[in-house]
Image (tube, one colour):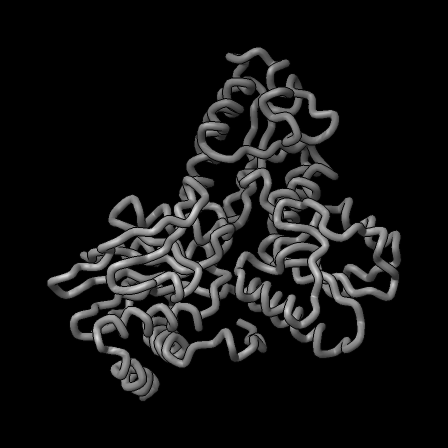
Amino acid sequence: MKQFEVPIIYRSPLISAIKQQRKEQDKLKKDFSPTHLDLGDLQVYLARHFGFCYGVENAIEIAFRTIEENSGARIFLLSEMIHNPQVNADLQERGVRFLMDTYGHQLIPLDELAAEDIVIIPAFGTTLEIEARLRSIGVQTERYNTTCPFVEKVWNRAEAIGTKGYTIVVHGKPRHEETRATFSHAASGAPTVVINDMEEAKTLANYIDGSKPLQDFYTTFKGRHSPGFDVTRDLKRIGVVNQTTQLATDTQAIAEFLKGVVEALPEGSFADTRDTLCYATNDNQTAVGGLLDTPADIAIVVGGYNSSNTTHLVELCEARLPTYFINSEEKLLSPGEILHYDFHKRQEILTRHYLPEKRQARVLLTSGASCPDALVEGVIRRLAGFYGAAPMIDAMIGSYSRP
């Protein structure tokens, strides 16, 4: 796989050494057991797969190269490059300005742009409507487009089944940038509807089998179906594609459920679209499964609070043990206090006594696909400092680096 030029500030000597050793020992990626870091009174178990994925590294490389090669130019990001506050802050410090927030609300009117301005399309991609608007101004959208290849794969798959007369059901968070982009691309060629979860899949099934009044569909899925959607016609042949950062098991369950519903119809047909699931999302989620096989006191998940793929890792962990979602090592206030994000309530909360006080602590650790490895090392060092084990980390780097 291609190697990207990512700023060294995001790299970690410890994590790089660990990942390289695990890669050499497990080239086929069949071992999902965690890496055990023995730090005496602190035992850290690091997920087999975590951190920057292909699409994120590609986007970061393009963004920083664009800044270096265009000194003096006005450079804009359509919205957040990725869902990581440190990376986005670094870009802003280098003069990049955001045109929209993560929900698509305009921060800078597009009317203020000129043809010579540079607009970077983020890893999530964007809608056909926004692309057309930028091109009408003269902005070269294709030149600085960092859309993840795996997101584009979803678009291509949606187009392929759309041309065969299937309606596209997008499993995604309706307000997420990637979902909005995928909806736009899918809806340009086929009837399309967005569902958020299994509950909404069940509601959609009620319209497919006619157990709910069909006219209610337009209220239930208002703003989430394509123009001209005909509920009496467009729910007989469907295929499911997903926001690539959703839980793979959720998408598969939804697809299997809807397949059973639509194939029960006299003229029903279902298109197989499982190949739209992102490999990195799958690997990270499977690695958490391996991580959770290890007895531990707590789990810590590191990443941006608005990161969908990170939130799903938190969901997996918190189903098994106390889990703390943080975006930097600074949230580890002390051995007795942690400031962490409750994504259910959408707020940071302070928890005390999160670490065992009178015995060895066992911590599971992973991070989202948009989280720099440097942050994960920072968390390990911070925890190690609480137990007087920080000096052991440098020695550990050397042990993982040796052949």
